[in-house]
Image 1 (cartoon, one colour):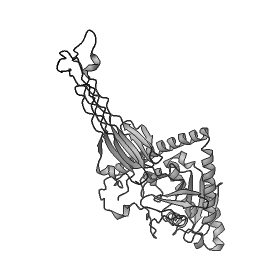
Image 2 (cartoon, helix red, strand yellow; image 1 turned 60 degrees about the vertical axis):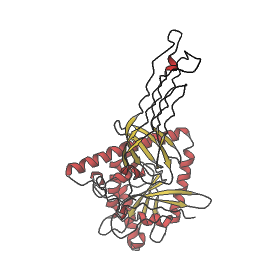
Image 3 (tube, rainbow, N blue to C red; image 1 turned 180 degrees about the vertical axis):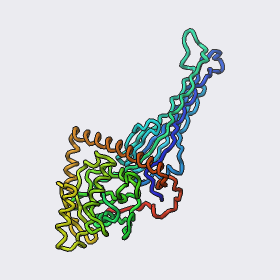
Image 4 (spheres, rainbow, N blue to C red; image 1 turned 120 degrees about the vertical axis):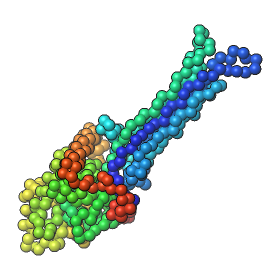
Length: 398
């Protein structure tokens, strides 16, 4: 199944049924009076977060979705049947926007959470409502209201506690394989990872967190180089970023590479760049002992780094235990802070700013690529059988 994290759908809620004009006609009741019933309401269109889904690909195949129309009223004061609501299943982490106004309709972050995106029309009134002492045979009715219609943009932002950030071949996928049961593709060439991967890291006593691995960035990604920056939006919800640095790159300076990634993150979203970050120096097992400290210090100096630093070799798991325990402590402290309403409100506003900055950055990148005549990766790709974009299910290591 092709991984799709954005789709535009046309939504039409059901129309309300018309009110009925009818008069009571029974034996021995010559003037029975009005008895026209109301029309039924139209069905609404509702999004529902489903834990079994991990892509929006269904909405690339079918872009129009409608609620059921309400039935008209009938005689004998019979009301029309209401239309069935249309429930659209989407992955947890889906954000809905009005594509015309760019206003955010809502954000589905919990399993089973529902979001009304188009309300069905109200049913019309039958003539029974218009009878009075001076109008004993009313012929007025009210037609049903039309249901809401709108074009909605769905965006999937995966929900994870920790995001991995780095160049291609920095060892992000290798790290997520080492600390979780996820098995993303790993190979000795750039851009092995083409779609986000999630892994659950489980510690003792039911302590766990979720890690998101996204395709690697390269210098110039903000202007469309490589896979661009469109996958950075999957780091928006994270509580912590791990900046993975390859300490033994082929003919490159680790310090310069680390600075370039920090610059690309700043261009994507200054607010996201202000996230708490851990610096993870990977592949130190390949660095000669007499060069290790010099390389380490050059990276710290280039970044003017003041935060936590971890030295690991993801290929064999060396140094990963202290890292995951430090991450768990940070996540648990963050969760406790979220119980404070003021802090939680600040985080919601922060997420809103990151989403706004991220959308603007992606739009600038797309506009630049179109101006330069560069093919937009995935925009016109209808190869639904491309195995490179398969979505895999990762299981939790108990």
